[in-house]
Length: 105
Image (cartoon, rainbow, N blue to C red; front, side, top):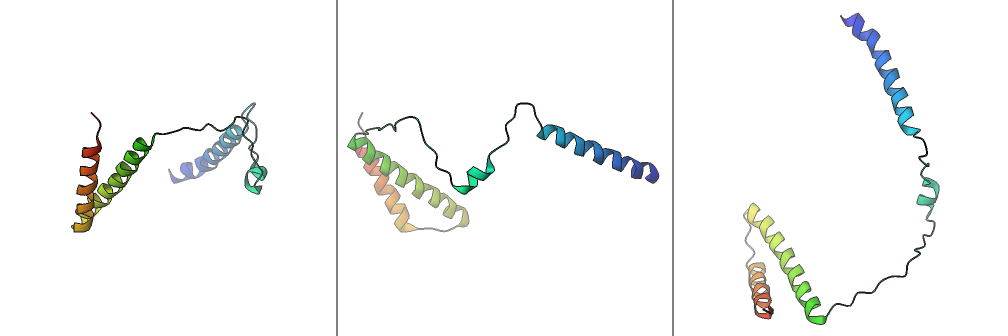
């Protein structure tokens, strides 16, 4: 049995190598240009950049939400470790109240 496995090993390796070479030589697949990708060639965009204007109240509310989400995530990780940060909890309450009071219904 061991002799049979030993003879089968080169056949399997040869077929795997041949299969890998065939996959790498797909028809019509261009070779990636690694030289220009790593040298730092400049890329140009054919479209002009778009400018999006956000109203000031929306931007302020988004900043508050982002800060609150970061604090809540940090608080969750600390809760899992058994750490209590009173200052952060107070800031979370303050930001949540600010969001609640500035909500436009």
